[in-house]
Image (cartoon, rainbow, N blue to C red; front, side, top):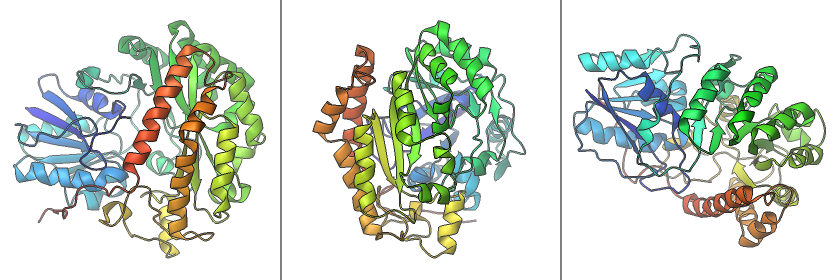
Length: 443
């Protein structure tokens, strides 16, 4: 038997910022050794629909759902059954089942093995639903699935799953609830050593959901002498011991969700805890004191945002010499409380923006209260252009405390900013999927 793993892109195009899709290494590790597996990542390569295979397996995100459904139609037209999993099919199983033969809802461990067995026997069930939260001990991603592919030179490694916060716009809490799990530290260390990469991206949605366990991991990383990146909540800044451990263990960059400079917006999105331990400037300085470059993330469109919010946020990001920054229109995602609220209030531009042929990347998907939808779209793109202007990139590069602290950081900074600028300009205003009708399964 042969299984073809597919990672859809936003549309049929190539991207220059693709990182290893860790989920497929996990699935490959769960697949019996007598089953052949191959991965095609549309961000890097076209999909060979006519290559013989027995099962097409797609992991679907909301942004690539329309494209995933179009890819599924190509395989089903050739008689190949299709199974879909990931966040989007978990939250929208009835929608996904219009385009796939089977849907996996929730984490794959304990389910994927059954999917493979049923596919071999020609009796795929329509839905495979995870009944709980499988333990992460013993997880063995098979990275051979990535051989020969030109991903960014960083290995993605997962320590834990879940987040202790429940921000209104985020679907992570809806997916995992209050469940928080970590892998044994020794297994994570062994995986990092086997990856033989100088840079590691710890992909946990918030690696500090359990601070004692985070400390245990960072102490174990020190002897490895690696460089690593992560996603963190800003409240970590109040823990000087943890920041020191991050620095000692090789943390170079951290993605931080600032979201908004307005405390009323933070309260509305259930993230006022961002300011619990002090103002943003003080927290940023603590990260900088430990040489940690910050990738700042902002969202716009909450009730207290106006057209002036964009300029204030860009000025703050530039003043802070952020390594990278993202300025996003607030986007209601399936499974998140935000989506249900905006739909109930009648504010949505599209009922399901991810399927709407008229929707384009970067476009506002709802009508905010403090500006028009068009102003939200234009303001976010303006902010991205200002932050990623060549003059801005050069000025921020000369920050000797972080971005220019050493040759490694400077090289990482320059490469990341050049790629980020190019990808932003390429994706803005591009439609999702291709200009063709979706083909639901007729049952």
